[in-house]
Image (tube, rainbow, N blue to C red; front, side):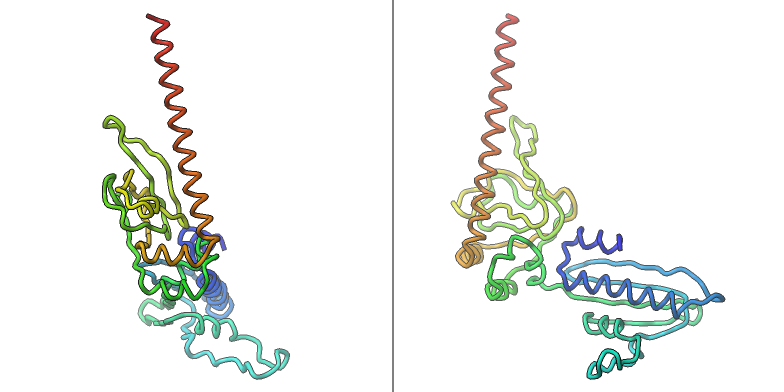
Length: 276
């Protein structure tokens, strides 16, 4: 399960998608081992996953006996558990949870390929973030269709220092850094990760961006304009308090860094004066 654990962490997958991922890996892979292979027919199982533009795709390839999951008869859910025929329930859940399920067999090579997809909506992404778990479900469902995901490659800038601050951003996945320039020298101020919000101070006071934000790794974000931001804050005092704490914490950290720099410069000036 280390494979699915890593994907869950990297992609910030909601519970439903984690469940489908684990179900496909456990149920399909187990069926291949138990029924696709035998003592005379043993080979490898290839597993790959990708997430692109909100679609989770799981691909399982094997060279066992051909079997199309669509051909598995549905379980009789109307009967009591002890009266049901053993088997088939896992594949039933895979078919129910997946948006699409494609199977193909290549007679020439002997390879079977099963492709399972699940489309992750913006509402699913927002619900997966702790930041929005205090927001009423109805508000998220209303706002989600109005939001769009933006993607940054590593090293790409989200905005520049001095740009207008008309929106803030929630990081869905990846990480970004906040940088500024002092006497021509680049200085990193902070690093933000998935689930955090960035740029809200400029949105609140309608001031230009006070720093530049750049992606450290491939990242996905969602932009919140003033109307959406106000709706979220107004719908959840807990969310407003969380953001307020975040802003206060950043201001305090910035003040501490400034004080530390002044103390260091004063110490250097005092040492230079004593040498003179």
